Length: 244
Image (spheres, rainbow, N blue to C red):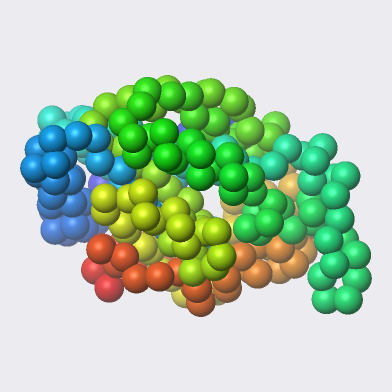
């Protein structure tokens, strides 16, 4: 078992991966991407889509570390930096299930992201430009603009909705050279999401209430409407990945 510690969105995260997954999935993936970049002779953009709680951000950071060890440097970015600002979400309302609610109550749903801004920045990355990229901080509850400078020949972009089969969102994968999807059981994701919410300072009851009201709707959206990818993975109850 390989232990991995990192910081994601301002929160300390501990993860572990099986040696089998590293040897049979992750290292071959990195080598495939390196060969693809050499063949195309330009930057390649890889998109990884997964439901909330599937460990995609941590996995991407692990791939970055593993790539460094293998001599295959990668740049890692996430779509969470395109959350709309907290003040904006608090001041806008939407009808849901016959009642009007604040957008902040469903933060993380597709409508709470700046899809236009995300699309424009993805276009820059796919074109090979060096550009700034925002990063979301869960402790601040807001994006930090230009927290990352995107450069390098292999860029890995992760997010819940990058392969979402919905209007506007389905256009994003057209910029990708390679796509990855992670699927998982809904109840496994629920437990992981409650644990994550508590790490941001939320009390147990409120964390469970938020996950059941907001996060699980997003989980179901991803599980039901994420399209097939070039590489499809399953995450089990232990957080381990296997080929789908």
